[in-house]
Length: 280
Image 1 (cartoon, helix red, strand yellow):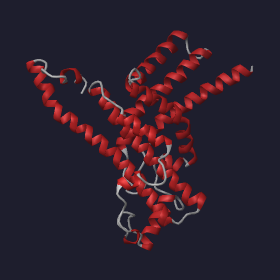
Image 2 (image 1 turned 90 degrees about the vertical axis):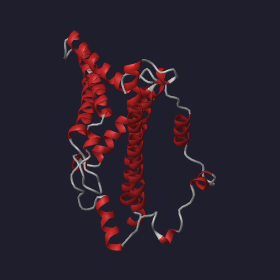
Image 3 (image 1 turned 30 degrees about the vertical axis):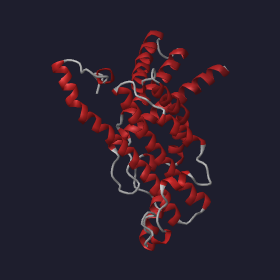
Image 4 (image 1 turned 120 degrees about the vertical axis):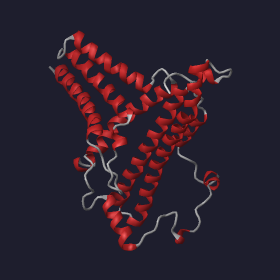
């Protein structure tokens, strides 16, 4: 009996995770400051790959429980798993890293969404008392400038000064820096996965800064003027993700003509013929 209850509990949990990923696609959020719908974030490919992954887990588990016929359940789970595997490119180091990162963070991300409330998850306007609304009101009424333009703060430090400072960078940043510096793309698809993966990672960091802003304002009780700077850091991290996405668009623009030339004249007499694939 206990195994039956536990089995159903696991199955429902996996189904809830799949439903949560679907909600990230269907329930389009609004930007906390501009109010614009983030359609691109909702429909980006990683959301669909994650939906296929959790659907494969849920369908496969219910097939084991006997809810689905073994052949039907196995086939559906295999199709979803194949879509997820192809999307994450799990046979590459960066794809395997992205999959492990997603699995490690998925439950925490889902809990954060639920803890912030259904209204914010649906992308509604900030309610009175929410961090963006409180900070925006303080910025307006008190005339708080951007931290990069605040004359009271002086000139921003040079990046080199930050690296050589007294406080070392946290271990996750060190690991990320090593991962980026040591990456060497095998072909254009691995480069695309690397750039788009890092763009998505930047958006995750942006969300983390916004969540930290909530903590500083509502739990720690810091002044909204300070929290406004943290929200700026989140916006900057999100902008960095957009920058990475734009950078890789340029790859397509530059090498589209090269691939067209290859299709008409044959392979290039250079390593580029090994680097480029047909899936640019």
